[in-house]
Structure formats: structure tokens, C-alpha cells
Image 1 (cartoon, one colour):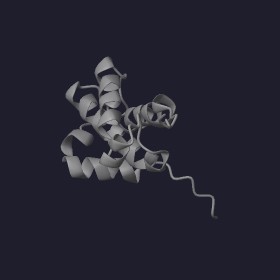
Image 2 (tube, rainbow, N blue to C red):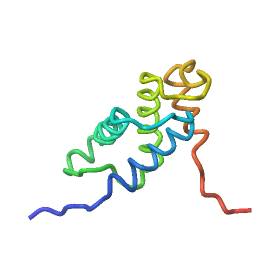
Image 3 (cartoon, helix red, strand yellow):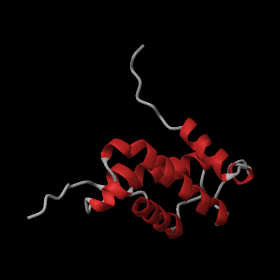
Length: 113
């Protein structure tokens, strides 16, 4: 037999990243193209180790990295489809700038103070 790891693509990865992308660009709405891109980005996020282990989703330890990547891919589609209301801010960024810009705006649960 095989050991399978149960994960949740929608609740752990897709919805948080979609929400982040939409909020950051003040999206008019989220269309089917963005939702499809989120699913494809999640599938593309598996690394070799995870693929070799027949995982459906990346390890939960990578959730922030994966959410950033999915949000990046979603924003690229939102830009392409003309759904951003950020006055061209994200459209003016190159991919590296956009990826870092998203990461800098992700909420970090830090209660140390």
C-alpha cells in the first residue's frame, strides 16, 4: 500500500492567494481566468521531492512561498484582463519587482510584542 497525505488546496492555498491578489490590486472582480490560473499555479508549485512522493499539493511548511507564487500568477492575469484598479502600479513592475512587492505585503502573524 501507499501512504497518502491529505491536504486542502482551496482552503490552504487557492482562496488565501486569490484574496491577497484581489486586495492588492483592488480588483474589479475575480474572473474564471484568474481562478483557473490559481489552480494551475498550485499544480506548478510542486517541487521534485513532492512530485516523487505523489503528493497532490505542496507541503504545508511552504504555504507562504506557494501563496506568494499563486498571488503573483493571479495578479499577472488580473493585469492582462484589465481588472486591476491600482492606477497601473502593478502593471509597471517587472516580474521580480512584483513578486517581492507581494511578499512584502503578506500578513505575518507576529505577536512577539
